Image (cartoon, rainbow, N blue to C red; front, side):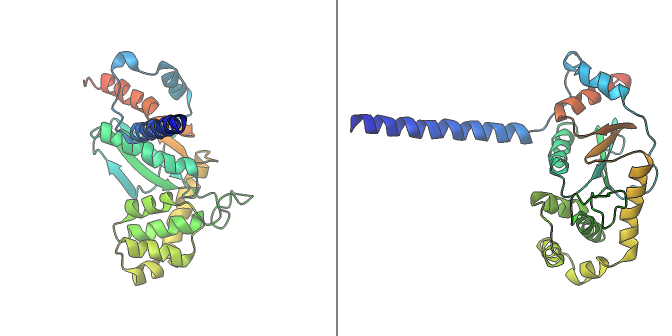
Length: 238
């Protein structure tokens, strides 16, 4: 009985340790990430960043958030069913909370779905075109970012009814939202983002453009934060 009691106590203690480790990991993944001091800049990533292709984006910037005078302007090309794109939402949330005056984030669509993206020869994420259209329709009622977060929280192939339910959850005018889903003008916005992505050579998601540097994939928030430090030095800021 003594050994059973000791074993039970050790088991409980073990669960407690695991829970504390999990809590610490989640906290670390969601905590704001401020720019590092100059001596802590990731020089390896800086070298990689400076070696990347430089592009100039055109077209309408419909959805943006952050500083009006940023040190970093980040355009992200996104598929709502891409797991790393969902991770990018958290990455930029951490960076913007840690550096609220230094980043501007611009959202552009690039669904890997052949139903609206002619460059996708083999279906990758069916339903992502419909998700992009739905997000634009939520944007018509000033809820683009909130709707995007709902899409990223459960990256399944939504039915039309489920997309409408998400709109209801945000207290949108559902009748107006459903009419918008069939609006050719909204689909045209998605097409223009896809064309812009193709023009600059994007083939995968997420792809981000930071101050003109084209980066395929998602660097860690700490690596991107190093760029803020470098830009602060160039601008003579502390």
